[in-house]
Image 1 (cartoon, rainbow, N blue to C red):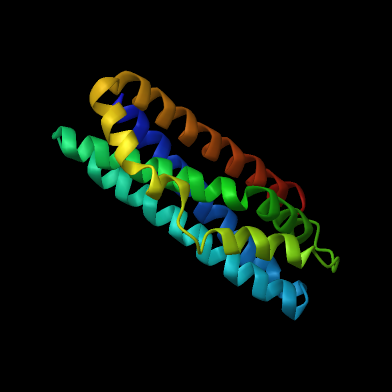
Image 2: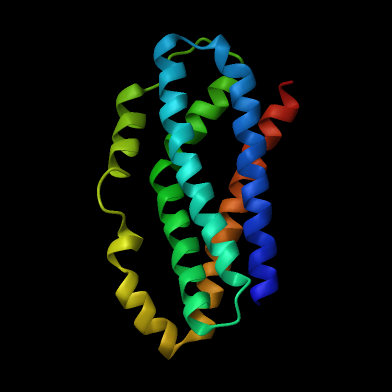
Length: 165
């Protein structure tokens, strides 16, 4: 299970990198406000990517504590992703189509602002740690499902850039 989770985390990180590069390449066609929103969003993606990196690093260890930290980091990444996914999808779609359509800045900024507050997973870490001790298999499956969701999402976003190139 650890190997599969590490593979999925690494694939998700690759997709985030690919999508970020594609958006960077096309963002110059947006208005100044939209470019600034992309920079803010890019920072959030960087946070997600860092959490995934931490999870991947923890998975390399054999200890139960490291495995728990891997799951916590992966679930924090998933939580951060869920907070921005709808707005990010709108932003990436507009950029992929190379339109000058102005985005709903208030919506995107609202989602980004949520990330400045205490994240759900960070607040719930102790409960997850307790559950990890009780039901390691359930936590592993939940984490894998969360990472699969993120990987599929970024694959779908990435395809938009391949179709609109």
